Amino acid sequence: MSAIPKSFEEWRFCIEQRCGIPLTLEFAEERLSIYMDENLPETQRFVKLYGGGHLCNIREWLSRAISEKRKPEI
Image (cartoon, rainbow, N blue to C red):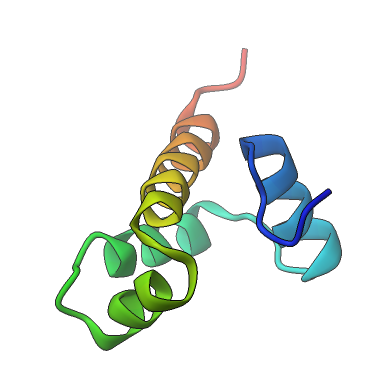
C-alpha cells in the first residue's frame, strides 16, 4: 500500500486502522463540508500537499462513506 491511498478500501483502512479514527457519519460529513469549500485554508493546504486529483478522490470516498452510513439496514 502506498502512502497515498488509491482506492476507497485503502483509504478506509488508512483512516480506521492506521489513524485509529472511526469513520462515522458525523466525521465524514464534517470532512466533506470542509473539502467542498476550496476557499478554506485547510482545503487549500490539502491541495498544495496532495493535489487536486486526490482532493476529488477524497470527496468521492467521503460521499461514499456517507451513503453507506445512511443506508437503512435490512
